[in-house]
Amino acid sequence: MTQFTLAAILAAENGWNALAGMPKTPKVAYTLMKYFKRVYTPEVQLIVEYRNDLIKELVPEGAEGIEQGTPEFEAFGERFSQYLNTSIDLEPVDLTMDELVDAISATETNTITDGALMSVEPFFKDYEPVAIREDEKEAA
Image (cartoon, rainbow, N blue to C red):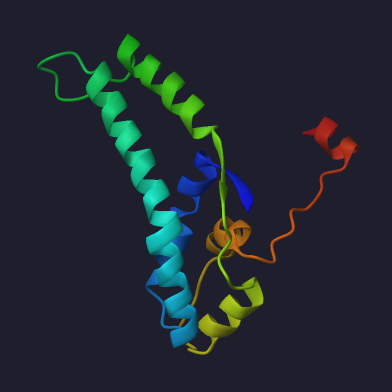
């Protein structure tokens, strides 16, 4: 299992969408489809449901949404940010990044940004986070 914040799950959505639209080998397509259905999509749905419920709770009766600069907007930002910082464990995709890149590279017309790949990389079974040295932490 790998730990993710809910914010990281949402941040990966564009990368997953980019991959979903690309031709790839059947095995990789099937593996990703199973992962989306069983693991990733249900988590995104829970985040969206929480956001929608929070908006309903905070929107004054008769209003169509939360207006920026209002106390409700501030409360939404605070509470939703706290929620997105929640960590959960997810199983990784049963593929390595090399297997994914090989599968999407089989078609010459496939292109993907490095940002899209970086956003989904932590979800793969061979992911190893890069350690930040103490002196780099202090500089940041």
